[in-house]
Length: 379
Image (cartoon, rainbow, N blue to C red):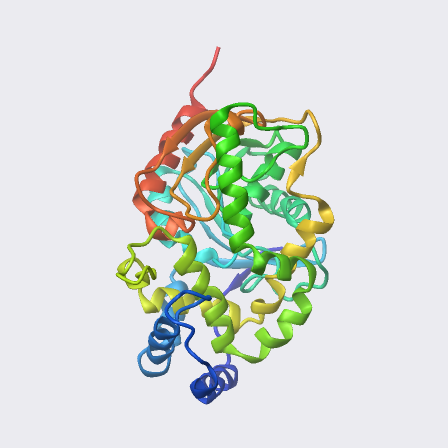
């Protein structure tokens, strides 16, 4: 049963958050020098100063509440989502975010896609934002089941498309693999799932895997902690809004396609505004999702969701927008084709991990072209 939903964080919760932000003792945080050992102190202080002096959460609530939002319960789990109806001339479309993003990543895509004729559904993943409380650890495979049921609830037996990056890409893959009759196609801006027996066989693939492994080894400390001890990390996250902001800001600084300053640090403000970043951070802090959003990492580990069975293929049409993700390096097309039925591959000229926020027009254009290609009759 669908229930209309309006974002409204209680006044006392907002006051508690701001009290903790104001009380943060900056004198206890040494500066290791720029971004050499994690988030840059100067950039974090800039964000927190904006939070204290200029950020208006109520204005952001008002802006986000312009999108029709709902909650529903699926197998005991509350799921929050945006739903905007098109005229029905195009199939329904599910847009999936990841961590440390949120449903607001797709703000700039929703209206154009609705105008195209799609019914657009943008959920908060279980444990994220207002898809809370979450009562147990769950990973992408379980979440894929829940979101397929959401699409059935919204669209009946009508087949649908899925677009996703980060966790959204993995969830889209599992939805397509398990429900090929319901999924018309998937469009991914990250490819990190393969069949268990797939191996690199060309020089290009071997070189990519070596570079990817080195990059991920350097940048994956957060993933190992969230995948093995998310509750312990959560104790700190639950009590420190500034800590949550730092944990998330680091990823936007390292994962996005950003210009570099003379000292090599990322210029966050060339691409992101303080308001956009803080609105996303507040969806973690205000809702308690800073703790529960990390649980998907443990669920992923327990499910073994990073691979499909040996010999498996995702047999629905797949499009890949290969953005210049500096950490999760996109594989060669030949490697991805060992698992996916790829009908469109685009090497993007710019944009990184947060494609829908960094380069919405590029992502939108590629998604539209992919959908048109997937809907064309094939002999």
